[in-house]
Image 1 (cartoon, rainbow, N blue to C red):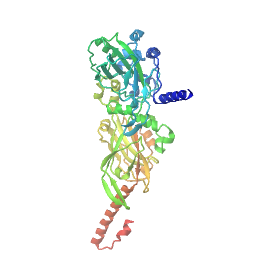
Image 2 (image 1 turned 90 degrees about the horizontal axis):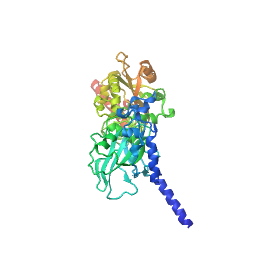
Image 3 (image 1 turned 30 degrees about the horizontal axis):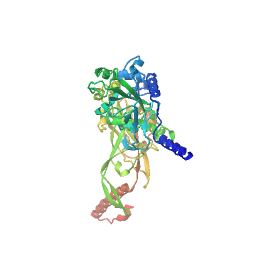
Image 4 (image 1 turned 45 degrees about the vertical axis):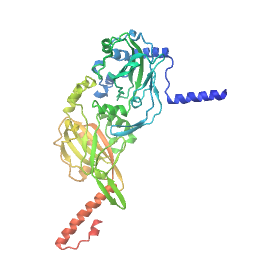
Length: 502
């Protein structure tokens, strides 16, 4: 008997370790859901971020049509005063289960891995779950559900006002009218997603015209479902790089820079240059790319091969590249809001003024040594529109110098700083064309202060004096010496070729 009890306890512990605990009693769960729906300001919806005086506009911008609703109930039904009658017919607490699905994904030019092997069961008081873990359509069931029943299932993102899933005639003859779309919650605040169950009233359900602005009240009226809302649950989503990357890929909002702020939040993670700059000012992400040349050669009895490819920097992953790839200036991309992105009726309506502000701004790009601030490149008065098309098109004040460490077999860190300013800087004096004291004494923080600039974005990279670059140096020296040898023969001079190589 004791052995059976121990085995049962072990089984329970194993289950609890793979599936997060959920509310087990349907009646209790329904009452808890009813209470959560009515609680004002339980969730910090987008527009409430504006209460923070340091908040940036895209952090607090939310769907304009939802900005006056601060509880799940008022936001779902778009009413200023929520009444419990909306949920009078609740009899079902849907059991929503996301099976474990670990894997890799790319976001913000970095490869991430989620190795979580626990399933997620939705619960009224669940901890916020990463969007990557709930990216696939879940299993849905509840007590007393029969295979020949017919229900309509709706997933709607309460925070963003979107339709995320719509299926009818579930489970008898399920027809999906809107494929499952995971949340793209980019803010750190928890975000609720409502799972709503309607019983079949015999009418054919019509798909809403807009997935981006889903009005549940209108949907219920158009399909005569006002008395048929019988089930409700709430998924609590957090945020992760997957959701942030999803927002960026959709062309709606680029919030990747928040991941950089997290990485460099502790002073010990910053080197000399970044320690002296106000990183909290950044409001965008900068994509920096180099064109790497093809190389195939034997160097010091070793085979060295580099493919011809575009190398995009990965500041989230501490990317190291060959100094050989940095011979020519990089291309730079920093997406800005454009006017055609405001037409979807979503939260981008609130960024219209920001676009006008951005379009009037000018930008300057500085590339510096991260340890000492030595200036490798400076372009000023870059139009905002050019940053959308990888065309710098500014005024060069310091010619580009490749990112080459002083010593062979060493690496050095470099920072790419994008500053914004409202005034032209064409009157700024030019720097020397090669290394000089003027470049070596460049101080990014002092330059920012003296010219009244704002730090808009930054990126980092480690460039290495490796075998490919050493081979390039050797070939360059050989060509020079051969040229000198040919000149010497023409003049009748005796040139010691090998001594000139060294």
